[in-house]
Amino acid sequence: MSAVTRETIIQAAHDEVGGGLSGPLLVLLAAGAGLSAATLYVAQPMLSQLARSFGVSDAAIGAVPTLTQVGYALGIFFFAPLGDRVDRRRLIVLKAGLLTAALLLCGLSQTPGVFWGASLAVGLTATMAQDIVPAAAALAPPASRGRAVGAVMTGLLTGILLSRVVSGGVASLLGWRAVYLGAAGCVALVGAVAAKRLPRFVPDSRLGYGALVGSLLGLWRAHPGLRRAATAQALLSMAFSGFWSTLAVMLYRDFGLGSATAGAFGLAGAAGALAAPLAGRLADRRGPGLVTRLGAALAALCFALLFFDGGLSRGGRLALLGVSTVGFDFGIQASLVAHQTLVYSLDPAARSRLNALLVSAMFLGMASGGAAATAALARYGWRGVVAFAVLTASASLAVRLATPDAG
Image 1 (cartoon, rainbow, N blue to C red):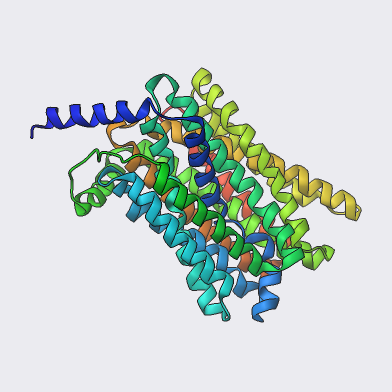
Image 2 (image 1 turned 120 degrees about the horizontal axis):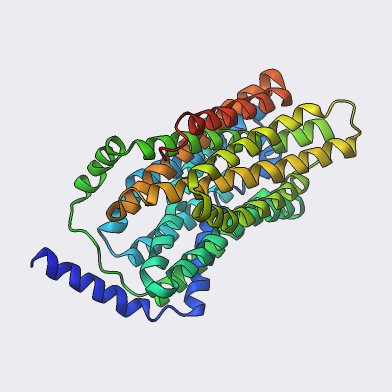
């Protein structure tokens, strides 16, 4: 079969299913993206509770978010290219089943070693979200493709927002195991509905798995703009993960507050949901490079504000923490949207793989940031964490300022 004939068949198949993207199917995709992304963050408000349950130190339990982020980065790098090669429905359903099993193992773990291994597996299989977003783009008619992808991304961001709030509240009422068991049930339900409702997808490539993964290195070498975007966003992700990986422990130590309060700070994630459309519109009008610089500068400034809590009352310190959280979350999410815009413009034929490289770098940053901030908290206290966040966010801004017009 000639390449032209194959491309014609693929496009015809996409057009056929695209016209049938219904409201309920779009809701399913948004819910699936949100739930899978949420599983990456449910542990963060519960870290102090988990440390007490397993009888380990705060530093040791800090490995949980690190392992989850490492798993996600590895899953993106090694599994995302499969979306170009096999039916995305099969990938989504398979990962939903594996993610359900990993969450169940977390909820039933009796030893920290098993729990850490299960947390790594959660990260690997939560990459289902990165199969759902391109699935929405493929199913949607061209005239409404942007709205469809936007709806799924809103679901993903909402999942991140609610994950910490819900997990913190449920853990305070029913214990941390209930969080994982409940999440497993929700993911299993999404997987079952997806198996029944999602259409089949015609693969876009006939390359073997080795060739798909092997092409990632060539793309990395070929596009300096990709390397700059990945480096800058990874640095911001280090600051982001460092803050969230240590917040629950700090709130318990300094304020005597539990997982419910730590989860409530996740409401600041609403800033990220607002940042996505605003950053996209500004990137269209003024260029994504400007948005990346503004986002990194805002994040660095808001982290720096946390140095000025000396002399404030207990309520004042918590209020400053909340304001800073809203600000840096907005800046980091705006920068991410702009970096994605930059990367997607580099090679339209390789958008999935370019996205895999960007997201892999971002989550490796999250993993290393969580580990570094946990060590900083143990040795230098909360101000050590703040200094680390300011340093990494400022480094991201420096990367963007070094080549302001080069993407």
